[in-house]
Amino acid sequence: MIFRFIGVLLLFSLFPDYGYSFRPRNELKLTLDNKSGKPVDMYWINPDNHEFIRQTSLPVRNGTDSYIDSYMGHSFIVVVSGETPKMNSNQPTFTLGTLDTVVTVTTNPENQLMTLVLITEKTQLEDKMAEILDYCRQEAIERFPEPRQGMEVNAGGEVVNNRRGVLLSRANAAQHCIKVLMSEELVEVKREESFMKELQLAMANRLRDYQCADPTAETSQAVSRSYWRHAVIKDSKGTMKPKGWGGRRRGFDGVHVDTLLDQERARMMLVHDWISEEECQYFIDQAKPKLHKATVAGRTLQAQDPGRRAMQAGILYDWDDPENPATRVANRTFAFASDALGIEFPLRYQEQFTVIQYGVDDEYRPHCDAGCTGEEYLPGGRVATMVMYCQTATKGGGTTFTNANIFVQPQPGQASFFSYLGPPADGNSSSVKENRIMDDGLTEHSGCPIYEGEKWIVTLWMRLGVSEGHSADMVDPRGFLAK
Image (cartoon, rainbow, N blue to C red; front, side):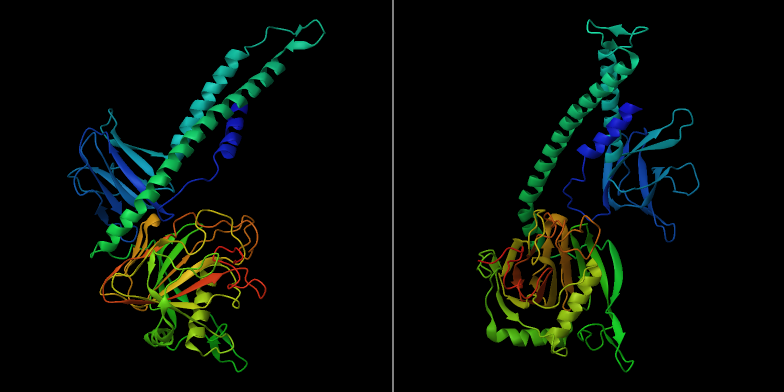
């Protein structure tokens, strides 16, 4: 038991929560490996009506495999090709957990019934761990065999051979053996992980260009759907009013929200009917006289970027003027972000709105709105973005999150909300200064080229840790003091 205990401790110390994911948190890869000796079909079991939905367009022949993208908690049934799936039968079923899974189908030679073996990264790791433990235990026993009866004493009178000493020596030897072998395994896994990450990033731009050029591309499927209402409070006369600074527009009760990505340090949501035509017209009218060539915020705060072709203008909002359209939209946006992330945002000393006009051939190449390499968060830096679509192009103009395999084909009035800040290690969601890590690439996004028409968007970047002496115009998007 001592060897297994040591192994478990080392497993936790040597295998932290590493990894680079390009998929929504609960999306999984399911592989069906057929070794049953006969062709099989796989069906998804709809939990709402128990309907069977076939997942394989053709039977999976013996000796071959097939894979699909699925989600944790989904249940399936495997049948011999041509058979009708039935619940409570001899046809095997399984339910996905939280990891990518390989399901191997075999046939029991005694009763000829199909059986399933589920293999995940966890079971593979457990098998590898058991193999290492067995090897190190046997090596320790061979190095330190059972002592003879009694004790052996050296010339100095010290006990050199007894059972307790042998067991301790075995434990130390096994511990060293496990450390060496597990370290070698971890180095190999890290090397493969690094290669896959570099390969994915190298392919991202090319995949993005193909996606942008695809006229049939549609918005990615939501992993969950919800409904958000702007909180209201009663004033001194008992009249219900929106909480905060009057951000509830006329006719605004709530909005449908599609969650497209839900990772610990990266979230992306498509919000429907977020901004009205009247509000959009206000922003466009205010921006037109001030449009200039688009810039990006960096250490010098304003710089032109060859990867960004567009026109833009900044629009201020005034918290002391709650009925101003820009203020209403700002209040609504901060309220949504606070609810989505469980964070209270400071309302003052934030960035102004940026209104952007994209014409034919204009685009914004892949970029991040703040740090996105897994660095530590700096107070004052950006943590979330709301992109509001006021006018969409006839052709082109989609929004891509290539590393996350997400595409948005926007409609007027919709908004893309995404955040790129992880939770604090202490679990206190209101903590700003300590132990927060930024996204590591999933929120890198781009604005596809405009092929026909024009696109107008209104963007609001949101920050934490801003104050009078540390305002958004004093620090760059990552939180560094501007030069």
